Length: 125
Image 1 (spheres, helix red, strand yellow):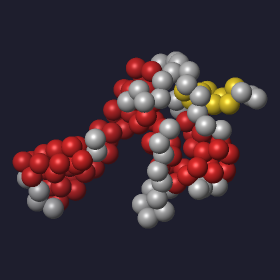
Image 2 (cartoon, helix red, strand yellow):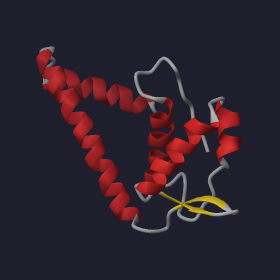
Image 3 (cartoon, one colour):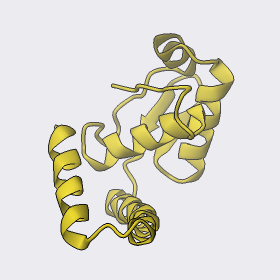
Image 4 (cartoon, rainbow, N blue to C red):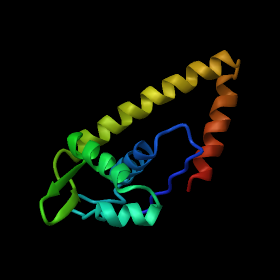
């Protein structure tokens, strides 16, 4: 599992971890039933506190993305994968709506915005 966090982003570390795990679940890089690293292991790998990773896992579990089995670990939830995808798309649309509003404030045309989006989309491969 590839997780990269940065203190320089305006997003809290636990939120960065959570968002990246959701992204990997929705994109099927993490499959239903697949185990996640233990909280301690992930904290060590990405050099954050155990509390930060635990908070991410707790939120992911409360939102239905993962399931935790005592003494066995945390696993990608096998339930409602399509519902999770739809929820992730909805969250993405809300963020995109904010970006569109900001683009209009900056007088960025639709064509300019689409060109920026295409460039960023192609860079993320």
